Image 1 (cartoon, chains in turn red, yellow):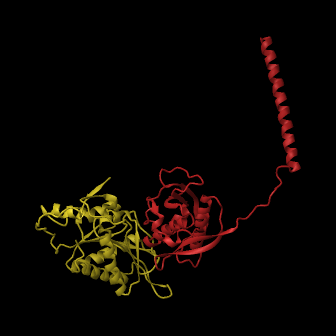
Image 2 (spheres, chains in turn blue, cyan; image 1 turned 120 degrees about the vertical axis):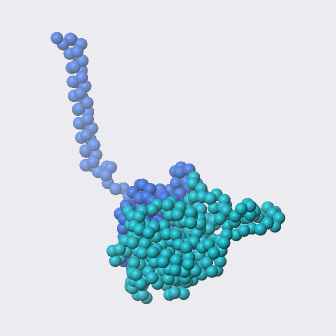
Image 3 (cartoon, rainbow over the protein chains, first blue to last red; image 1 turned 30 degrees about the horizontal axis):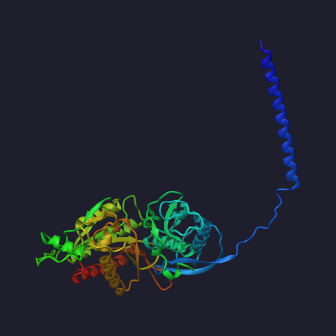
Length: 210
Length: 238
Protein backbone atom coordinates (compact mmCIF):
# COMPACT_ATOMS: atom_id res chain seq x y z
CA UNK A 1 0.00 0.00 0.00
CA UNK A 2 1.29 3.45 -0.94
CA UNK A 3 1.68 5.78 2.02
CA UNK A 4 0.13 9.23 2.09
CA UNK A 5 3.55 10.92 2.05
CA UNK A 6 4.60 9.06 -1.10
CA UNK A 7 1.36 10.00 -2.80
CA UNK A 8 1.89 13.69 -1.99
CA UNK A 9 5.49 13.49 -3.21
CA UNK A 10 4.41 11.90 -6.48
CA UNK A 11 1.80 14.57 -7.08
CA UNK A 12 4.36 17.31 -6.39
CA UNK A 13 6.85 15.80 -8.83
CA UNK A 14 4.20 15.52 -11.55
CA UNK A 15 3.17 19.14 -10.99
CA UNK A 16 6.82 20.28 -11.09
CA UNK A 17 7.45 18.37 -14.31
CA UNK A 18 4.42 19.88 -15.98
CA UNK A 19 5.44 23.37 -14.84
CA UNK A 20 8.97 22.97 -16.20
CA UNK A 21 7.63 21.65 -19.49
CA UNK A 22 5.38 24.68 -19.79
CA UNK A 23 8.27 27.06 -19.03
CA UNK A 24 10.57 25.39 -21.57
CA UNK A 25 7.85 25.42 -24.19
CA UNK A 26 7.31 29.13 -23.62
CA UNK A 27 11.07 29.86 -23.79
CA UNK A 28 11.30 27.95 -27.05
CA UNK A 29 8.43 29.97 -28.48
CA UNK A 30 10.10 33.23 -27.49
CA UNK A 31 13.44 32.19 -29.01
CA UNK A 32 11.68 31.26 -32.20
CA UNK A 33 9.94 34.64 -32.26
CA UNK A 34 13.30 36.40 -31.83
CA UNK A 35 14.77 34.49 -34.74
CA UNK A 36 11.82 35.32 -36.93
CA UNK A 37 12.11 38.96 -35.96
CA UNK A 38 15.74 38.82 -37.16
CA UNK A 39 17.06 40.53 -34.09
CA UNK A 40 20.23 38.38 -33.86
CA UNK A 41 20.75 36.92 -37.28
CA UNK A 42 20.92 40.01 -39.45
CA UNK A 43 24.48 41.05 -40.30
CA UNK A 44 25.28 44.39 -38.79
CA UNK A 45 28.59 44.91 -40.63
CA UNK A 46 29.79 43.91 -44.05
CA UNK A 47 32.76 41.51 -44.05
CA UNK A 48 35.99 43.38 -44.55
CA UNK A 49 38.85 42.29 -46.83
CA UNK A 50 42.34 42.77 -45.47
CA UNK A 51 44.42 45.20 -47.46
CA UNK A 52 47.15 43.51 -49.51
CA UNK A 53 50.63 43.53 -48.00
CA UNK A 54 54.07 42.83 -49.40
CA UNK A 55 55.23 39.28 -48.75
CA UNK A 56 58.65 37.90 -49.65
CA UNK A 57 58.65 34.31 -50.82
CA UNK A 58 61.85 32.30 -51.12
CA UNK A 59 61.13 30.45 -54.34
CA UNK A 60 63.16 27.34 -55.17
CA UNK A 61 64.61 26.58 -58.56
CA UNK A 62 65.63 23.01 -59.39
CA UNK A 63 67.69 24.11 -62.38
CA UNK A 64 70.40 25.85 -60.40
CA UNK A 65 69.64 24.62 -56.86
CA UNK A 66 68.87 28.13 -55.71
CA UNK A 67 66.39 30.08 -53.62
CA UNK A 68 65.33 33.42 -55.02
CA UNK A 69 63.43 36.08 -53.08
CA UNK A 70 60.28 37.21 -54.89
CA UNK A 71 57.90 39.86 -53.57
CA UNK A 72 54.15 39.37 -53.89
CA UNK A 73 51.21 41.48 -52.77
CA UNK A 74 48.88 39.33 -50.67
CA UNK A 75 45.95 39.90 -48.27
CA UNK A 76 47.49 38.63 -45.04
CA UNK A 77 45.70 37.98 -41.74
CA UNK A 78 46.96 39.76 -38.65
CA UNK A 79 47.24 36.57 -36.59
CA UNK A 80 50.86 35.36 -36.96
CA UNK A 81 49.94 31.68 -37.31
CA UNK A 82 47.33 32.36 -39.98
CA UNK A 83 49.76 34.76 -41.64
CA UNK A 84 52.44 32.07 -41.80
CA UNK A 85 49.96 29.63 -43.29
CA UNK A 86 48.89 32.20 -45.88
CA UNK A 87 52.41 32.91 -47.14
CA UNK A 88 53.27 29.21 -47.25
CA UNK A 89 50.02 28.59 -49.11
CA UNK A 90 51.03 31.12 -51.75
CA UNK A 91 54.50 29.55 -51.98
CA UNK A 92 53.08 26.07 -52.55
CA UNK A 93 50.60 27.48 -55.07
CA UNK A 94 53.59 28.71 -57.07
CA UNK A 95 55.12 25.23 -56.93
CA UNK A 96 51.83 23.67 -58.10
CA UNK A 97 51.73 25.92 -61.18
CA UNK A 98 52.48 24.28 -64.52
CA UNK A 99 55.50 26.43 -65.36
CA UNK A 100 57.13 25.98 -61.96
CA UNK A 101 60.86 25.37 -61.78
CA UNK A 102 60.26 23.35 -58.63
CA UNK A 103 57.10 21.39 -59.45
CA UNK A 104 55.14 19.91 -56.54
CA UNK A 105 51.45 19.05 -56.62
CA UNK A 106 49.14 20.07 -53.82
CA UNK A 107 49.16 23.85 -53.58
CA UNK A 108 47.99 25.93 -50.65
CA UNK A 109 45.85 23.17 -49.16
CA UNK A 110 49.02 21.19 -48.39
CA UNK A 111 49.71 23.21 -45.25
CA UNK A 112 47.32 22.06 -42.54
CA UNK A 113 48.51 24.37 -39.76
CA UNK A 114 51.44 26.46 -38.64
CA UNK A 115 52.01 26.70 -34.89
CA UNK A 116 54.28 29.36 -33.42
CA UNK A 117 55.99 28.53 -30.15
CA UNK A 118 58.78 30.00 -28.10
CA UNK A 119 62.04 28.81 -29.57
CA UNK A 120 63.10 27.29 -26.27
CA UNK A 121 60.83 25.40 -23.91
CA UNK A 122 57.80 25.06 -26.18
CA UNK A 123 55.70 27.65 -24.30
CA UNK A 124 52.99 29.38 -26.33
CA UNK A 125 53.97 32.87 -27.35
CA UNK A 126 51.81 35.84 -26.45
CA UNK A 127 51.73 39.10 -28.34
CA UNK A 128 54.36 41.65 -27.50
CA UNK A 129 57.19 39.29 -26.73
CA UNK A 130 60.32 39.60 -28.83
CA UNK A 131 61.90 36.25 -28.19
CA UNK A 132 62.78 33.93 -31.07
CA UNK A 133 60.06 31.62 -32.26
CA UNK A 134 59.89 28.03 -33.37
CA UNK A 135 57.43 27.44 -36.21
CA UNK A 136 55.93 23.97 -36.42
CA UNK A 137 54.64 23.37 -39.93
CA UNK A 138 52.07 20.60 -40.17
CA UNK A 139 51.97 19.33 -43.75
CA UNK A 140 49.34 17.06 -45.22
CA UNK A 141 50.35 13.52 -46.13
CA UNK A 142 48.97 14.00 -49.65
CA UNK A 143 51.62 16.69 -50.22
CA UNK A 144 54.42 14.46 -48.96
CA UNK A 145 53.18 11.52 -51.02
CA UNK A 146 53.22 13.58 -54.20
CA UNK A 147 56.57 15.26 -53.54
CA UNK A 148 59.28 14.24 -56.04
CA UNK A 149 62.04 12.19 -54.47
CA UNK A 150 65.56 13.55 -54.51
CA UNK A 151 68.03 15.18 -52.19
CA UNK A 152 68.13 18.46 -54.09
CA UNK A 153 64.42 18.93 -54.58
CA UNK A 154 63.53 17.92 -51.03
CA UNK A 155 66.22 20.14 -49.52
CA UNK A 156 64.99 23.06 -51.60
CA UNK A 157 61.42 22.57 -50.42
CA UNK A 158 62.45 22.51 -46.78
CA UNK A 159 64.78 25.50 -47.12
CA UNK A 160 62.26 27.55 -49.10
CA UNK A 161 59.62 27.00 -46.41
CA UNK A 162 62.11 27.96 -43.69
CA UNK A 163 63.29 30.99 -45.65
CA UNK A 164 59.78 32.19 -46.46
CA UNK A 165 58.70 31.96 -42.84
CA UNK A 166 61.71 33.93 -41.64
CA UNK A 167 61.42 36.53 -44.38
CA UNK A 168 57.85 37.37 -43.34
CA UNK A 169 58.00 36.59 -39.63
CA UNK A 170 61.52 37.63 -38.59
CA UNK A 171 61.07 36.23 -35.08
CA UNK A 172 60.84 32.74 -36.53
CA UNK A 173 64.37 31.39 -36.26
CA UNK A 174 63.69 27.66 -36.08
CA UNK A 175 61.35 25.40 -38.00
CA UNK A 176 60.16 21.86 -37.41
CA UNK A 177 57.96 19.75 -39.64
CA UNK A 178 55.08 17.38 -38.96
CA UNK A 179 53.06 15.35 -41.43
CA UNK A 180 49.42 14.89 -40.45
CA UNK A 181 50.43 15.81 -36.92
CA UNK A 182 53.18 13.21 -36.61
CA UNK A 183 56.95 13.21 -36.98
CA UNK A 184 58.18 11.57 -40.18
CA UNK A 185 61.78 10.54 -40.83
CA UNK A 186 62.04 12.26 -44.19
CA UNK A 187 60.09 14.27 -46.72
CA UNK A 188 60.27 11.83 -49.63
CA UNK A 189 63.15 9.59 -48.63
CA UNK A 190 65.96 12.15 -48.31
CA UNK A 191 65.44 15.45 -46.48
CA UNK A 192 65.53 14.85 -42.73
CA UNK A 193 62.27 15.93 -41.09
CA UNK A 194 63.23 14.86 -37.58
CA UNK A 195 65.58 17.76 -36.94
CA UNK A 196 65.02 21.42 -36.18
CA UNK A 197 66.02 23.67 -39.07
CA UNK A 198 67.57 27.07 -38.52
CA UNK A 199 66.12 29.74 -40.79
CA UNK A 200 69.47 31.52 -40.90
CA UNK A 201 70.69 28.69 -43.14
CA UNK A 202 68.05 29.50 -45.75
CA UNK A 203 67.66 33.27 -45.94
CA UNK A 204 70.26 35.81 -47.06
CA UNK A 205 70.62 38.60 -44.53
CA UNK A 206 69.28 41.28 -46.89
CA UNK A 207 65.98 39.42 -47.32
CA UNK A 208 65.39 38.64 -43.69
CA UNK A 209 63.39 41.78 -42.90
CA UNK A 210 61.26 43.06 -45.80
CA UNK B 1 74.78 9.63 -26.82
CA UNK B 2 76.89 7.51 -29.13
CA UNK B 3 80.49 8.55 -29.65
CA UNK B 4 83.05 7.75 -32.24
CA UNK B 5 86.78 7.53 -31.75
CA UNK B 6 88.47 9.71 -34.27
CA UNK B 7 91.89 10.31 -32.80
CA UNK B 8 94.91 8.20 -33.47
CA UNK B 9 94.27 7.81 -37.13
CA UNK B 10 96.81 10.38 -38.22
CA UNK B 11 99.65 9.37 -36.01
CA UNK B 12 100.82 6.32 -34.19
CA UNK B 13 102.41 5.57 -30.85
CA UNK B 14 103.59 8.27 -28.47
CA UNK B 15 103.51 10.92 -31.15
CA UNK B 16 99.72 10.71 -31.19
CA UNK B 17 99.37 12.55 -27.91
CA UNK B 18 101.64 15.35 -29.09
CA UNK B 19 99.82 15.94 -32.34
CA UNK B 20 96.36 15.68 -30.80
CA UNK B 21 97.12 18.09 -27.99
CA UNK B 22 98.51 20.70 -30.36
CA UNK B 23 95.51 20.27 -32.60
CA UNK B 24 93.00 20.83 -29.82
CA UNK B 25 94.67 23.70 -27.99
CA UNK B 26 97.03 25.84 -30.00
CA UNK B 27 97.98 27.86 -26.92
CA UNK B 28 99.82 24.96 -25.38
CA UNK B 29 103.55 25.09 -25.87
CA UNK B 30 104.70 22.52 -28.31
CA UNK B 31 106.54 19.56 -26.98
CA UNK B 32 110.23 19.12 -27.66
CA UNK B 33 110.93 17.94 -31.12
CA UNK B 34 109.73 14.41 -31.33
CA UNK B 35 109.31 12.58 -34.57
CA UNK B 36 105.65 12.47 -35.58
CA UNK B 37 104.93 9.43 -37.59
CA UNK B 38 102.23 10.05 -40.12
CA UNK B 39 100.20 7.33 -41.69
CA UNK B 40 101.63 5.92 -44.87
CA UNK B 41 100.60 8.04 -47.81
CA UNK B 42 100.05 4.93 -49.89
CA UNK B 43 97.05 3.93 -47.83
CA UNK B 44 94.10 5.44 -49.61
CA UNK B 45 90.64 4.04 -49.05
CA UNK B 46 87.45 5.21 -50.67
CA UNK B 47 84.00 4.31 -49.36
CA UNK B 48 81.30 4.12 -51.99
CA UNK B 49 77.81 4.17 -50.51
CA UNK B 50 74.93 3.16 -52.78
CA UNK B 51 71.97 4.89 -51.15
CA UNK B 52 68.71 3.09 -50.31
CA UNK B 53 68.26 -0.66 -50.92
CA UNK B 54 65.97 -3.43 -49.74
CA UNK B 55 62.64 -2.11 -48.52
CA UNK B 56 63.87 1.44 -48.98
CA UNK B 57 63.40 1.83 -52.70
CA UNK B 58 64.27 5.52 -52.83
CA UNK B 59 62.63 7.59 -55.52
CA UNK B 60 61.01 6.47 -58.73
CA UNK B 61 62.85 7.63 -61.80
CA UNK B 62 61.02 8.87 -64.86
CA UNK B 63 61.45 5.63 -66.77
CA UNK B 64 59.97 3.60 -63.93
CA UNK B 65 63.26 2.39 -62.47
CA UNK B 66 63.92 2.59 -58.75
CA UNK B 67 66.58 4.82 -57.27
CA UNK B 68 68.05 1.94 -55.27
CA UNK B 69 68.83 0.03 -58.48
CA UNK B 70 70.42 3.02 -60.17
CA UNK B 71 72.65 3.77 -57.18
CA UNK B 72 73.76 0.14 -56.87
CA UNK B 73 74.67 -0.02 -60.55
CA UNK B 74 76.58 3.23 -60.25
CA UNK B 75 78.34 1.98 -57.12
CA UNK B 76 79.52 -1.21 -58.83
CA UNK B 77 80.74 0.78 -61.80
CA UNK B 78 82.62 3.30 -59.70
CA UNK B 79 84.14 0.58 -57.53
CA UNK B 80 85.46 -1.18 -60.62
CA UNK B 81 86.99 1.99 -62.02
CA UNK B 82 88.66 2.91 -58.74
CA UNK B 83 89.95 -0.61 -58.14
CA UNK B 84 91.44 -0.60 -61.61
CA UNK B 85 93.40 2.49 -60.60
CA UNK B 86 94.79 0.71 -57.55
CA UNK B 87 92.54 2.39 -55.03
CA UNK B 88 91.14 0.33 -52.20
CA UNK B 89 87.36 0.58 -52.23
CA UNK B 90 84.88 -0.31 -49.51
CA UNK B 91 81.22 -0.44 -50.54
CA UNK B 92 78.34 -0.26 -48.11
CA UNK B 93 76.28 -2.75 -50.10
CA UNK B 94 76.83 -5.07 -53.03
CA UNK B 95 73.25 -6.25 -53.38
CA UNK B 96 69.67 -5.17 -52.82
CA UNK B 97 69.90 -5.05 -49.06
CA UNK B 98 68.54 -2.61 -46.54
CA UNK B 99 70.94 -0.57 -44.45
CA UNK B 100 70.24 2.08 -41.86
CA UNK B 101 72.12 5.40 -42.00
CA UNK B 102 74.00 4.35 -38.86
CA UNK B 103 75.13 1.11 -40.49
CA UNK B 104 76.41 3.02 -43.50
CA UNK B 105 78.33 5.43 -41.28
CA UNK B 106 79.65 2.52 -39.26
CA UNK B 107 81.08 0.88 -42.37
CA UNK B 108 82.64 4.15 -43.50
CA UNK B 109 84.17 4.91 -40.11
CA UNK B 110 85.64 1.45 -39.71
CA UNK B 111 87.27 1.81 -43.14
CA UNK B 112 89.07 4.99 -42.02
CA UNK B 113 88.59 6.28 -45.51
CA UNK B 114 90.09 9.31 -47.17
CA UNK B 115 86.97 9.90 -49.26
CA UNK B 116 83.38 8.81 -48.80
CA UNK B 117 81.02 9.09 -51.76
CA UNK B 118 77.31 8.56 -51.21
CA UNK B 119 75.46 7.93 -54.46
CA UNK B 120 71.88 9.03 -55.08
CA UNK B 121 69.72 9.46 -58.17
CA UNK B 122 66.84 11.83 -58.82
CA UNK B 123 64.31 12.64 -61.49
CA UNK B 124 64.41 16.40 -60.89
CA UNK B 125 67.03 18.95 -61.86
CA UNK B 126 69.77 18.20 -64.34
CA UNK B 127 73.35 16.96 -64.40
CA UNK B 128 74.91 16.19 -61.05
CA UNK B 129 74.09 17.59 -57.63
CA UNK B 130 76.89 17.63 -55.07
CA UNK B 131 76.15 18.03 -51.39
CA UNK B 132 78.32 18.35 -48.33
CA UNK B 133 77.03 18.20 -44.78
CA UNK B 134 75.37 21.34 -43.44
CA UNK B 135 77.04 20.86 -40.07
CA UNK B 136 79.32 23.62 -38.87
CA UNK B 137 83.03 23.02 -38.83
CA UNK B 138 84.77 21.94 -35.64
CA UNK B 139 88.21 20.75 -34.69
CA UNK B 140 89.13 17.10 -34.61
CA UNK B 141 88.76 15.54 -31.19
CA UNK B 142 89.59 12.08 -29.95
CA UNK B 143 85.92 11.33 -29.29
CA UNK B 144 83.12 12.99 -31.19
CA UNK B 145 79.33 12.73 -30.92
CA UNK B 146 78.09 10.14 -33.35
CA UNK B 147 75.43 12.34 -34.94
CA UNK B 148 77.83 15.20 -35.68
CA UNK B 149 81.07 13.34 -36.38
CA UNK B 150 81.16 14.88 -39.85
CA UNK B 151 81.61 18.36 -38.39
CA UNK B 152 85.34 17.72 -37.98
CA UNK B 153 85.61 16.84 -41.66
CA UNK B 154 83.34 19.46 -43.20
CA UNK B 155 86.21 21.60 -44.46
CA UNK B 156 87.80 18.63 -46.22
CA UNK B 157 84.39 17.49 -47.47
CA UNK B 158 83.91 20.88 -49.10
CA UNK B 159 87.37 20.60 -50.64
CA UNK B 160 86.51 17.16 -51.99
CA UNK B 161 83.23 18.55 -53.39
CA UNK B 162 85.30 21.25 -55.09
CA UNK B 163 87.54 18.67 -56.74
CA UNK B 164 84.53 16.65 -57.93
CA UNK B 165 82.82 19.81 -59.13
CA UNK B 166 85.86 20.87 -61.10
CA UNK B 167 86.19 17.48 -62.77
CA UNK B 168 82.50 17.19 -63.64
CA UNK B 169 82.32 20.72 -64.98
CA UNK B 170 85.36 20.16 -67.16
CA UNK B 171 83.69 16.98 -68.36
CA UNK B 172 80.70 18.99 -69.56
CA UNK B 173 78.27 17.92 -66.85
CA UNK B 174 76.17 20.66 -65.24
CA UNK B 175 76.79 20.69 -61.50
CA UNK B 176 74.92 22.27 -58.63
CA UNK B 177 76.53 22.53 -55.22
CA UNK B 178 74.73 22.54 -51.92
CA UNK B 179 74.79 21.57 -48.29
CA UNK B 180 72.24 19.41 -46.57
CA UNK B 181 71.50 17.38 -43.47
CA UNK B 182 71.60 13.67 -44.11
CA UNK B 183 71.88 11.37 -41.06
CA UNK B 184 74.28 8.87 -42.62
CA UNK B 185 76.66 11.53 -43.91
CA UNK B 186 76.55 13.57 -40.70
CA UNK B 187 77.91 10.56 -38.79
CA UNK B 188 80.77 9.79 -41.16
CA UNK B 189 84.29 10.59 -39.96
CA UNK B 190 85.78 11.12 -43.40
CA UNK B 191 85.64 13.71 -46.17
CA UNK B 192 82.15 12.90 -47.43
CA UNK B 193 80.18 14.11 -50.43
CA UNK B 194 76.74 13.13 -51.68
CA UNK B 195 76.62 12.74 -55.45
CA UNK B 196 73.07 12.87 -56.77
CA UNK B 197 72.79 11.88 -60.39
CA UNK B 198 69.99 13.75 -62.19
CA UNK B 199 68.87 13.39 -65.80
CA UNK B 200 70.98 14.93 -68.53
CA UNK B 201 68.99 17.59 -70.35
CA UNK B 202 69.46 19.63 -73.47
CA UNK B 203 69.03 23.39 -73.82
CA UNK B 204 65.24 22.99 -74.00
CA UNK B 205 65.28 21.05 -70.71
CA UNK B 206 64.34 17.90 -72.57
CA UNK B 207 65.77 14.76 -70.99
CA UNK B 208 68.54 13.18 -73.05
CA UNK B 209 69.69 10.57 -70.53
CA UNK B 210 68.08 9.13 -67.42
CA UNK B 211 70.18 8.48 -64.30
CA UNK B 212 70.03 4.74 -64.89
CA UNK B 213 71.26 5.03 -68.47
CA UNK B 214 74.38 2.88 -68.63
CA UNK B 215 76.38 5.18 -70.90
CA UNK B 216 75.49 8.18 -68.81
CA UNK B 217 76.50 6.37 -65.63
CA UNK B 218 79.76 5.27 -67.23
CA UNK B 219 80.59 8.85 -68.18
CA UNK B 220 79.88 10.21 -64.69
CA UNK B 221 81.64 7.31 -62.95
CA UNK B 222 84.76 7.80 -65.07
CA UNK B 223 84.81 11.49 -64.20
CA UNK B 224 84.34 10.77 -60.51
CA UNK B 225 87.11 8.17 -60.56
CA UNK B 226 89.48 10.65 -62.22
CA UNK B 227 88.57 13.29 -59.65
CA UNK B 228 89.19 10.92 -56.75
CA UNK B 229 92.55 10.02 -58.25
CA UNK B 230 93.34 13.71 -58.38
CA UNK B 231 92.20 14.03 -54.78
CA UNK B 232 94.73 11.37 -53.83
CA UNK B 233 97.53 12.77 -55.95
CA UNK B 234 97.08 16.29 -54.64
CA UNK B 235 97.54 14.98 -51.14
CA UNK B 236 94.22 16.11 -49.72
CA UNK B 237 93.90 12.97 -47.69
CA UNK B 238 94.92 13.05 -44.03
